Length: 273
Image (cartoon, rainbow, N blue to C red; front, side, top):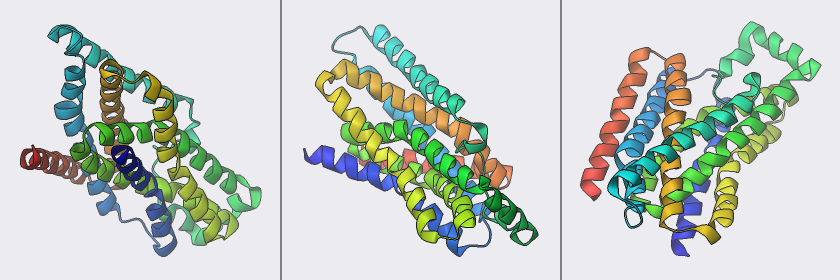
């Protein structure tokens, strides 16, 4: 029971970091591109490294008591790409204008003295963009929540860097929700509230997913979920984090962040193995 509470708490922390992005949007007149570029690259490095070198092999180990070594690895690999397929389908179903992978900048709504935002706000489109972005992020965060929760439940030592990586990449998502809502309504309370609620999709996704899967949970099901978690995180890294890191800043900054994330993850695994 204690492990479940810890896993849920870590998932909650990761999800609600969208609120940090919302607060940044209120107090800043521009986006710190260098910080976001490095941090998003760092998140990608952590996710890719831990997925390929830790989570996927551990998923294969879960099948070892029931299948041969070759079949265990085959099932793990199929589940790995199944996770990628799942998150790709979710992305495909989201409208491109509200896709959380689209880079949003604080200063975009402050060009021309804010005239563009005033025009969009008057038409109601700005409010619609913010609401649908929050909905899109909520849907997108649902499998992320389950991924974080399962990782924390199975390997608490691995969960902390994963939580940190997901939290970092949720910050720009908070900005993407709060900027249009704030400009459309003039209410920081509404903007922060909607951003905060979109982040709640992660712990809610974790809880619902766990309640559905708990009656069927065994080593095989656990291995499949764990491998799918790895696939989801690798897909997010290559489809979302690295492209966004390059758009926010210089190409080399995103790569430095990527390498730094891998190095920190490798060092932490060596120190705590």
